[in-house]
Length: 103
Image (cartoon, rainbow, N blue to C red; front, side):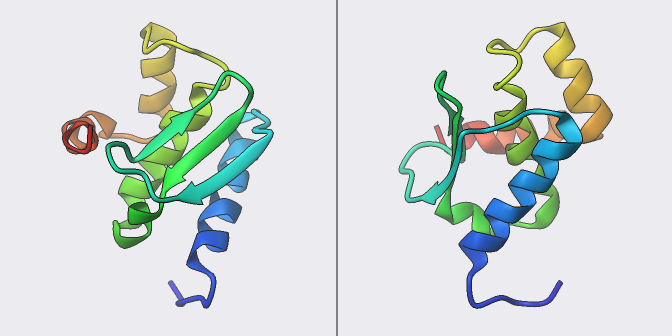
């Protein structure tokens, strides 16, 4: 992957590419400092990703991106949510513990 002068912008673009694939439409995608989380999704459709995510490998970034984007459609972590996570990010359960360490 080539380096960019604007890594946060690249992460936003990647998030929007995932949004198309998942058929969801976030109102806003932000990358900012977050002290306790890797990402969040508001009821108003704002997806916020931690700037620290830029230092993580792409598979973990995808896990967080997909997790937050799916919350635009499913507010809970129910069966359908987990099935879609498995379909789009195989092995996501192994990354779940790591994500939870940030909370």
